[in-house]
Image (cartoon, rainbow, N blue to C red; front, top):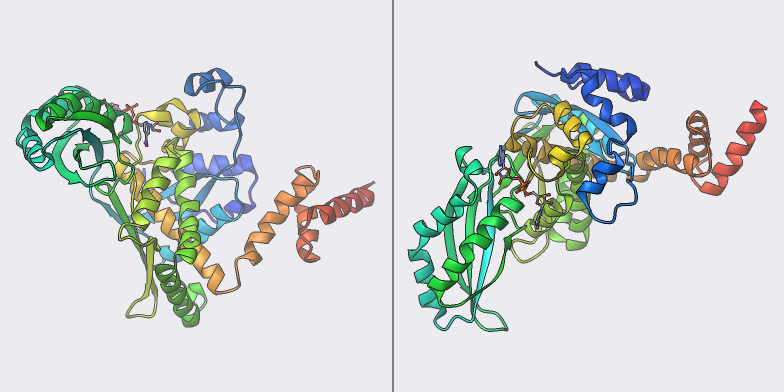
Length: 423
Ligand code: NAD
């Protein structure tokens, strides 16, 4: 079923109405989203996931609207505690929509496992001997995961290099594995452990670490979009976003914050879908420093028509099977809402949302400053923290914004006066 991610007035609806609209828009039965009622994770389920469980922690799950990727609409679930993230992604996606939305592509779901071999007497000879055993090592790796091989995945390549270290030269082998619709950490770790003895024997050394690299640069995903100049606020805003982008490219202090804005979008979807936020974050930041200096992950340029083009390319090791993606009921609901059928498609939506988020932050910074919109939404959190009940939050927040005092103490006073008026 074709999804329409453009739902007008979505933000003004009640939680129940929004959920019904999302179920309808995504073409899923309302019952498929029932896990969202309770935070979605029962104590016994949590107890099976990690150790020493004493409870669960709830986080808001919002849905970004207006997202189109490669001509297909998606309603995008985002789990985050930060106000304005979901609204910003939806607004930026609306601006991109006018010129066809996001266009995304990827390099394929290939992960790298590293095998470290130490105590090697002749490292350069050892490297060659390891590479001569390529076919044998790849076959041994494939034998560990017949399911993956049957699905068209499996070991693809073996590389090796001599790494000079302060502990002497070491031989480092990389096993490249197509992990299909998995994030793949467990899959490739199992393979690395299995091939390490044979590989070290060839090298004439001792196998030490055998684990994936989170610098997943054989699993790159890229997105681009054209953001309409007029909808952004005019030609000056376009020029100022280009200047802001250049600042982030040139300065690591700015780049860290620029990239954090990208991760606001990326991590929220990664978390909502039960994927490993730390793996994705490690990969993205490693990629940002790939040429030696930490820099911006995205680029903004002005096109021939005066519109803004944005591009973002990052490693995106996410899956639809394995880890918590299948074990967590909310992750399952999130995947249904997204309507993606492969890990590659999920990764393309995630990177597109990262670009949308980045554009929204750069636009706010270059135009009115970030605090304007952010503090409006933050006022609601402050109102709730000050003790306002859900039906009191909007009016208290409104008063904080109107009086320009978004502070907890003032929220307490505003709440007391509101209750006084009502009494
Ligand atoms: P997994 O082992 O649970 O699932 C992958 C397996 O599922 C494959 O090996 C395959 O046998 C099977 N499978 C079934 N259908 C498949 C399909 N369509 N495509 C691919 N495989 C399919 O999980 P995983 O994805 O290998 O590992 C992910 C987990 O590893 C995450 O929970 C992550 O947090 C964790 N982890 C991460 C790191 C790290 O990032 N450094 C290290 C260790 C573990």
